[in-house]
Image (cartoon, rainbow, N blue to C red):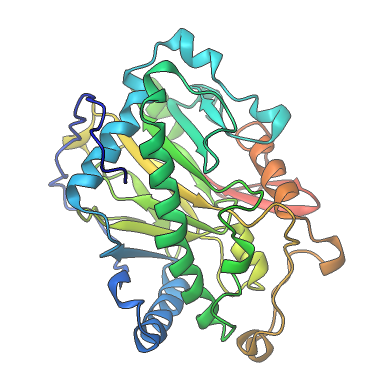
Length: 363
């Protein structure tokens, strides 16, 4: 993060952690301070592989940024929402369906949730190449910090994790790093995301679901933990479990691209967002993310030279010859999400076809 005098911005005060007795997933904790030695990486890779085969989510601690730096990035994250008027937001809204890109704002009520109810979620998305788009006036002075944050996430968090994912498949450590270049053409990006409280009528119509169960589009999703208890994962026994907030920790999961590249070994993890528990209702939920996405020209075929895949087999969702590039897959899923006419195929599961691939949504 830049060490010069920083612009003064309001301090964002989140909700206090919930005191409700929720059912939390028992997630593995990956201590990133241990990646500096081969022995440490080997042990962490085994932990990570086990975490991915059980819950599909894990925590990361000791990632190198302090609690003060954590609080600063949440202060920054709130500015695109509280410091920018609705009229100015419209000027910087992305043409998501046409471009297949989230860059800029996704405004509220863009996605259809259920029962005619549209979302109450805003997010502001910034490519790691922060010069790709113009930014609202209130955000402009913060761009150096956002750029530094993106670079830190990419090089100091994403890349070390990608090495662990590769080791878990008994591949050379740099296998996935080599297709997630920081200076390559690609869509890895920072997202600031704000959920706003909804009406009782909307809660009833959607059965309290704010964002349907889904998998992410890229390879690795990094969520900076925040206290509002709304994120749930679908466990192997079909139950939804909450993700517990850990101070200055990261919550990490795999997305579609890593599932394709790993031949189904690391599955895209199913998760959703629901209304917070009673003692947190009425608060906004501010999120900070870094989404790792392979380079645009990467064809999403399995690394079938993996000794692990040779032992356990490859689970394909399409033939290698039909595999999309990262750019094609990411754009297609982005364009379709929340806009498609989903078909109910089984109780609680809806489907759509994207690039010839069945994509499910859990409701």
